[in-house]
Image (cartoon, rainbow, N blue to C red; front, side):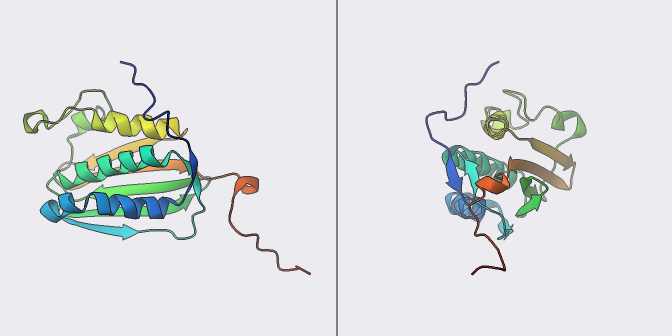
Length: 171
C-alpha cells in the first residue's frame, strides 16, 4: 500500500518543537483528563527546526492519544538533542505491546484495538510524517510495563541555525 505524503500542501517552516508539543498538550487535554497525567521535560536549548508543523502536530497528537488509550496513568514527553537530531520520546506506563505485535505497529491497518473501532492507520501516518522529514520513528514496549515511541527530527545545519551567535570578541 502506498500512502501519499501526509500533508504536502502545508509548507515547511521554522518551528520550536517545544512550543509545538505544548500546543499538542492542549489539544489532547480532554483525552488526558479521562485517562491519565502528562509530564513534559523539554530541552529549552533546542534550536528551531524546519518542519511541516501541522503534520508533526498531527503525529504527536496521535502518539499521545495512543498512549492515553493504553490504560496508562502516566505519559511522559521528553525532548533532547542527540547529535544532529532533536529526539522526542513519548513514554507511557500502560499495558504495553506484545513482542510479536510491536514489529507490526507501523504496518497499514494493523491494530490491537480493532474491537474499539481503531482503523490501524494512526501509526503508519506517524511513521510517514516523520519519514517525510527525513528521519525515523521507533517503538519499544514491554508487555505489562508500557510503551515508548522515539522520534528523531533533523536539527538545522550550523549555517542555517537561527540561534544567536555567541562571539566573545565583538567590537
